[in-house]
Amino acid sequence: MSADAPDMVSIPRADLEALQAELRRLRQREGDRLAVTRMNADSEPSPDEPGRVFTRTDLAQAWGISG
Image (tube, rainbow, N blue to C red):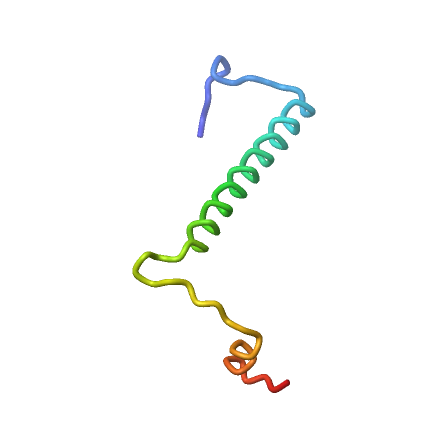
């Protein structure tokens, strides 16, 4: 890729690193927001299919654990 000198800019390294850190922070925050949205969507039972509550015994039996 070739760029003419008028198309190029120069910024101090500290500014570049600060911008990169801010971009990482914003991407992380957006990722967290999406994860929470998905968790909330998954936790709501469907009207057609009420949510099932599993007891410790149910889970132990499903995993083949004897207590």
